[in-house]
Length: 125
Image 1 (cartoon, one colour):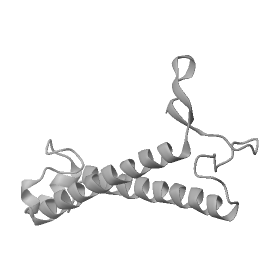
Image 2 (cartoon, one colour):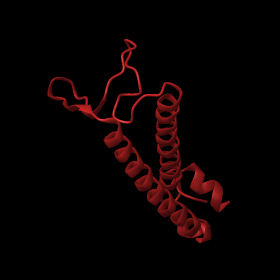
Image 3 (cartoon, one colour):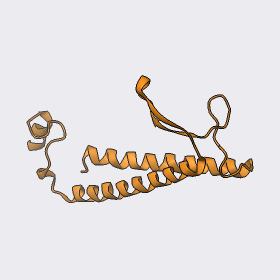
Image 4 (cartoon, helix red, strand yellow):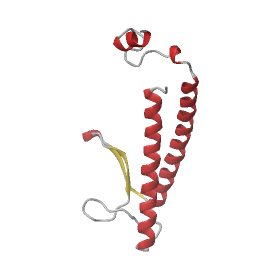
């Protein structure tokens, strides 16, 4: 059985890849259907206005953001993010293969980490 951590890593990588690809697809679709130039914003904000991207960390008063990030630059960042997540996914998949090949007895209990619990007692019985 693979560990919960490995399963989470696989799910998170798949999710990020899916969301990023959807974003790129939406941007391309809008650009083609509305004949928007490559350097013009494609996506709309909550007020229905097209705006350039923002990069940052919204942490309240001390938030750090860059405004007006051009679509082509944003697309490059998104593609780099996809590549990074694909590499993480490949690594997590390999880790899962190794975990599946390990004998069950070598891994600690998922309930207590080997400290002893009802699940451990059930396995021994």
